[in-house]
Amino acid sequence: MTTSPVPCPTASQLLRSAGACIDPADAALLLAHALRRPRAWLYAHATDPVAGALAAEFEGLVARRAAGEPVAYLTGRRGFWTLELAVTPDTLIPRPETELLVEQVLVRIPPGGPARVADLGTGSGAIALAIACERPLARVVATDISRRALAAAAANAGTHGIGNVEFRQGDWWSPLAGERFDVVASNPPYIADDDPHLQRGDLRFEPRGALASGRDGLEAIGMIVRDAPAHLAPGGWLLLEHGHTQGEAVRALLRSAGFVAIATERDLEGRERVTAGRSPGLAEAG
Ligand code: GLN
Figure (cartoon, rainbow, N blue to C red):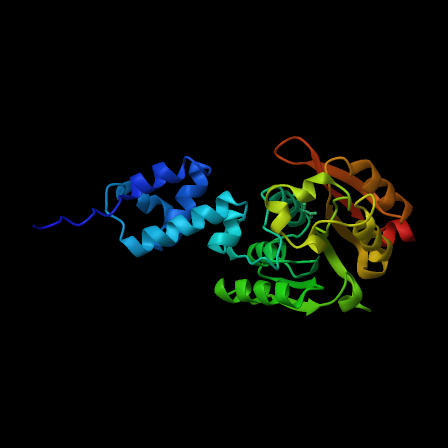
């Protein structure tokens, strides 16, 4: 008697059964990752059989996603701006709203000339690399307190062949002592320590030091603003991402540190998300 082998499941069968327990879009990303193919490949090959070992690998990823692990940590990748970045659990997962910060930085760096730029708390390098890539004549310094995050960021710079970023380890301004910049950007931690969101969704898996910052979430932002005037060229800009309820508090911090031209931009959901301020220039100072 012969037994016929169990047929391998097709890509679309795997997606259908995964779609019962995780978001179908996440399932497609995970299957593409397991098959080492671009996501678009799946649509043209929906009826291809998937080898048992790869199907098992996919099912393992689906189980981890169903248990809460972020897709970006499972695939080790996340798109940000024009860059596909490697992300690890040592780095915050880049978020679409942070592209608003990049946009606002770029508005303040003329494309044709040199500029000194810093990104404080760079994580995966998302902000620094996007800026460096768009402004090849700028010199960008990216800092982080986490050596492991810096290693991930430096690897991303290498992958994309971006040479105009320098990585330095240390807390906020400490690696930048005695230096001044034309533009400084940061997406610091800004969630209140007791915010219940820290216990939900992807945030449970992200580095807490990249998310939470004191009782009101404003500890890191306060430190950055306080020492910013000593690190900005006359007329230089500080741009900060913050929580959508923190716009007024961040504007007040900038005002009391002597900043001018303070303005807040809203993200795609219409929420206050990025505030910029300018260090008094020579005209104002004189
Ligand atoms: N925007 C992120 C969130 O609320 C927080 C990132 C941060 O603290 N910088 O999930």
